[in-house]
Length: 125
Image 1 (cartoon, one colour):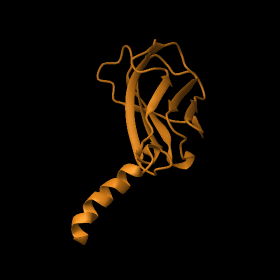
Image 2 (cartoon, rainbow, N blue to C red):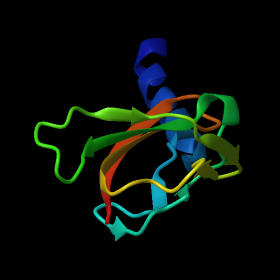
Image 3 (cartoon, rainbow, N blue to C red):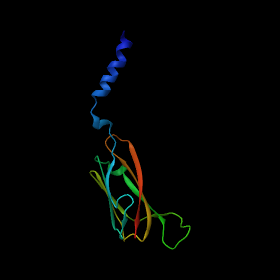
Image 4 (cartoon, helix red, strand yellow):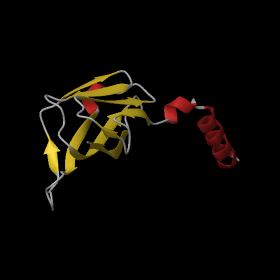
């Protein structure tokens, strides 16, 4: 009889947990936005649905195409400062990004301690 009650009690306990305990942060908005063409940005920002753990969250930026250069190999962009505060990551470039196509990869960790990753592309024109 004990075993027959265990499964329903476990299911009931699981459903009683707050929904936020099982949620993961998701990207709410970004600047530049996915697929956007922007003019010489010096800052990028990403807003998420939950507060982030700063030391475990960040971005990587790679230039994947450059006008006039055939067979351009991806070039990681280095030297930018990243600040994580609350639900937002802001990356400040030392100088404006040159014309080209970029992939921004992000990784974030919120209170649930699960690493969530994503990426998107944008162009500088």
